[in-house]
Image (cartoon, rainbow, N blue to C red; front, top):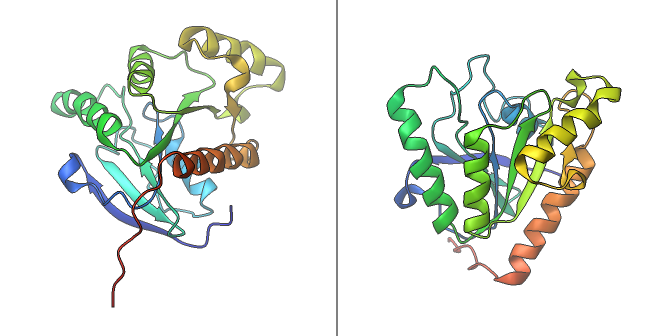
Length: 208
């Protein structure tokens, strides 16, 4: 897909503040510091549409972006960072669960895993919710440039075993080298097309 326009729309913590469901959506989820912001910026060919930070845990709301007037990209709050206030940690679960349960326009969630890290309880909890609500999942392993090629399969096997996901289902991605870029875009486009074909969304409103 050629990204012509990528526009920030709004941030929200509850359904009353979500944008209207006139486009299919792809959401991105993962632990803090998993490389989510860098991946989104690389996919959209933007340097800083989504803020990157050396301090994990900065994304604490659901951030909606309109891409090409064709679909919405949703940057979900990162989780698992110890220094985030306790109140924010407690809010994360209900906020994400509600979004997954109620957002009918959701076409898929891109679930990110750092190749150097073993998935933990929050990762498994999110996978359980995705399965519970029948949300298509696109698993991606990030930062593959951080390990030697000879070590990739070892790390992939460990992540697959913990998550219960078939190793062949993962896309291996590097925001630095763009490896996995085309494969991931292909999977996003398939998910978006499947969502529209399954249940067409309302036409966007016309304005004079």
